[in-house]
Image 1: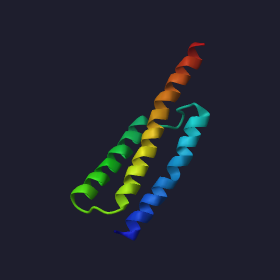
Image 2: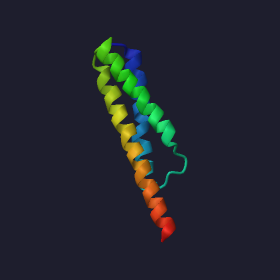
Image 3: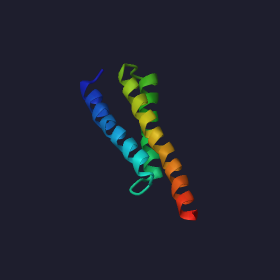
Length: 90
């Protein structure tokens, strides 16, 4: 297990709860990119696959946790898009 990989994953993961909270409270997609979220999810999936195939250790939990948080943010993107469309039509 690499301490530096763990530090990187913890630092990256620390930002996602704030992003999720902002997305949830603002009910807006301003400043969000769905493509960016999908690329990040793909990157975490690649990290998980690497851990499974070549270097299984506890860091896989951080990859999975981060991927779940980004996926929640992506779901909020769709929710907020619906809310913005609904607000615009009323």
